[in-house]
Length: 218
Image (cartoon, rainbow, N blue to C red):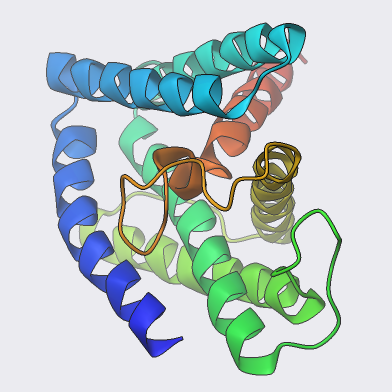
């Protein structure tokens, strides 16, 4: 566990500042960044799936997913950067909590689709998502005076998106299992492929985008 966690820590210490730069900078640099991410994701998806119908369906989904990433960062409202970062934190904290709780407490397996997933890991994902997202909201309110309501609705949204992130992880795990692959690639030490790292995010962003659109339609 320590060796694997060390690899994740080193990779994250490089990737996080690099990614944050493009996210915060915005403009054409962010657009170029997500285009590169889309190409890498599509390449890994292409290498993973052999069924042509599923392959095309996956490409269409990835296109919509990265489109929603672009829209959420640029067009939703004046707090778009902070909304974007909140979604990132929900996904990362869910993954981190799942990894730490799963390795520490282990226990019954969650599903055969992904043998490493446990009920304790799922619970850890929810707990970390609530704690770290709440701390981030308190931070941005204190230092940037941006008001985000920490109501029960907010907590429920965090839990729902954490669930979506975990389901997204399972979806990618399902296709890896069907293809007899341990990871979607080997691009990121300790994490595997790029899709392994963003499997929850590619589902969370379009779901949040759809919810936001429905909210404004209502």
